[in-house]
Amino acid sequence: IPVLAFGVTVTTGPGRSWVTIGLVGKKPIYEGIMAPNSSQHEILLGPAEVSVGAGGTTVKVIAGRSSQTLTPPAAPFSYQITPKL
Image (cartoon, rainbow, N blue to C red):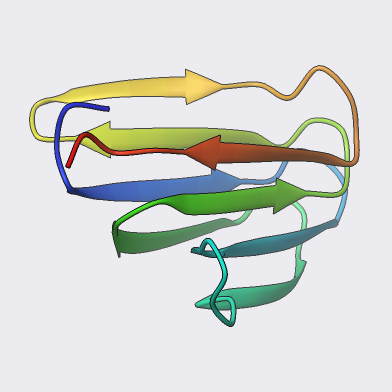
């Protein structure tokens, strides 16, 4: 992504999902089992990793005025998000 700081919102579907959100190589900022139809939003600064453990979970990355919603092709699945430094 073209900025150093960005937001990530993980939204679960009809089932619970295990989720971690954090910077690569660091302790996760958020780690836990999310309830069905809930969201968790974090602001990140630097290379990040987002992992989801159940189908129907989406990951939205927000950078400035742009955003993209990602739907994992399988569960569990991890995304590596690398900002332009």
